[in-house]
Length: 113
Length: 112
Image (cartoon, rainbow over all chains, first blue to last red):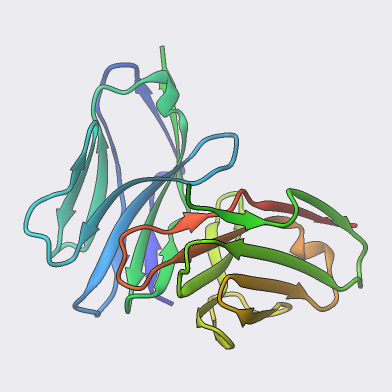
């Protein structure tokens, strides 16, 4: 199976600080997409950000940015100015061959006041 | 508002029962997926379908089958439910080449 690895099962961050959630992927496909999803305790999956393998610039969406390092096969999520509402599970995912969608094991982020 | 709808939020079934989990999407998406989510393991792909009547095994297909008779509906079938299939099941859909997967609300299945 194509692998997505998230090595941080849980993390703490102080409110208003920045935090980086790690993600590495493993594929030989030249074309793929990388995603981050947020899952609050209510259970729904919320799309945060997308990076295409051919995109030259790192993706940004508001307080979220994706630090894409293609040679290292890493796609870390950076959340700036953390808020209490950012406390949730975060999943990294990759789309291969235009339709195979795989997820990592997740990182539980806790934002402390 | 785009939607992926799973037929049940919570289900309790007995060991050995045949269980159907239904998922319907209204976005005319080609691809549909079934995952199970377990603590510490993330979302693991059970099966996916890229067209009507087409299916491919994911990473953990054992004990499951699927059916896609219509484009909008993707069913997950547990032929004979076992206690190790107690889990949260998530359905998702995507348009080929698009940049987002849309998820259902999840079905928490308990097999007793």
